[in-house]
Length: 636
Image (tube, rainbow, N blue to C red; front, side, top):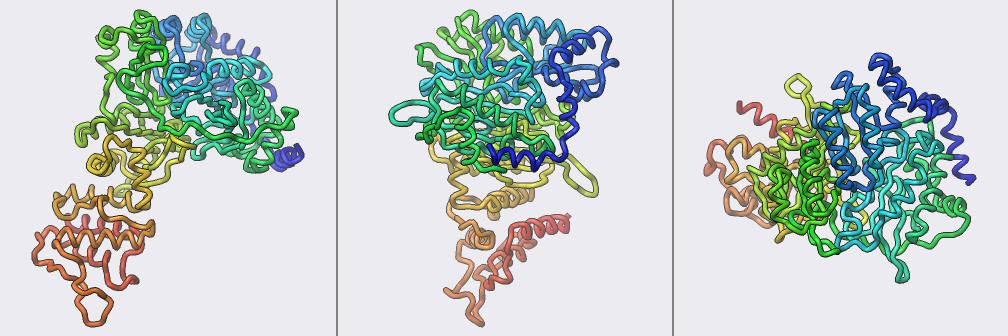
């Protein structure tokens, strides 16, 4: 453990002030204070308790809704029994204005509660085996598993029992309540598909096979903006809880406690190296561990639609809940279906809901639940994630949920799709609670300068993946005005609609594009086509990605796009000689006189894209974007 001790010592010169609060933290005393506040009122709550202590019990003060609190309910693995669902529905309707958010950690958030109602609400939840303990700040958060764990046709290892073993180690255990250096996310996946964002966790066990035995490969250090890395360790199912406890103990003992932005497990591992950290796990366990096996979670994740066949002979029905905006009344209807069919309720990381144990499909689909949340939704609404946003979170830059829903509805109208899978993930700020990095397209709220003012906007990311060992999305477009973002995305969706192969998902389509094009080229296409569409010039100047590939060098991609434009305008090639660099030869074969006068402002731009001398061509797409904006301004 020498390397871990040294790394910890180098970061221990100055501890964050939060650590002082944690040093004096007593779970029993903090709980008693919480109950006491219910009697003495909102004004009596100290700022320290509002900012940190109450969050240890999943109770959050929300400045956007004064004197109203949010309770985050831990739903282990996203599974709710009928009894539990009915109680959550009752609490939401009685104390929380009938509002529910389904979260990306398969949990439920109840909002608008008064401090005086919180003890009763928490007791009702505890009586049916639900709790809000340790769902905030520096704790082990809700454990993610496949929402169809134990039921999916491709589920090899049911992880529910393992989840319960791991949870029993830390839940309500004073030694683990708010004693970690930072929050710690856990994921378990025993299926061939990744339906639980497994590679986005601090500690992840993903289905693997070694020497004929099914088990898990261990991945460590995932967080927003960074996927978990392979620890090169194969873990048998009966060792999973022990390995978790070893990793958790190392993090608690040696994790950094100075800069809260750099205190997650990822940074400890980076400081010492994965091989050293793996050695430390083995030392903590007291025995060596086998090297990783063959990873088996190779299929695309995400939700199923419609009627899902289960391995017990029954079915599940999927309800699309865009951005997770739900209600107690909705949950009551879901519980009624589950009760009448003898099934249960599963929540997904994409903020949707699945009802299991269905034997009478038509009876279930007649429920008000499926009238409100379609069983076969538009692809744009089916896998639509958005975090709480500025309405409910003090960190939110943009509203988030309404923006996501607005874009989904717009795309459904403008670029309708069938038999497609589109994952649009929204984070209202850079903290990334909407897991934007895992989306086909991800959106992060920001501020954008526009005509001398600052307006709401988004940065757009592309290429997140849930298949294989996952892939984090990369920046595509920066600083897009929020109300215009949907138009940019529509341009890419038209390419997807026209060029996809059979029922190809957007994830696979984007990865296919990225083999041929840089993200700069894809982003430029979206900008150019949107501008051309606004000018009603699509018939000639519209780009497509069908025949003109690039080589990921911007200047060469610009040249290829320019040649494609000339071909579109004239029906011929840009040059009338084989070598346009020969002296005295006319470089351009097309005659601008044949063009509609509306196209003339683009003459200089097109010629600079394909100038015979490479030095005089555009080198980066940003230059063209700036000239387009200048042309648009001068044409007004």
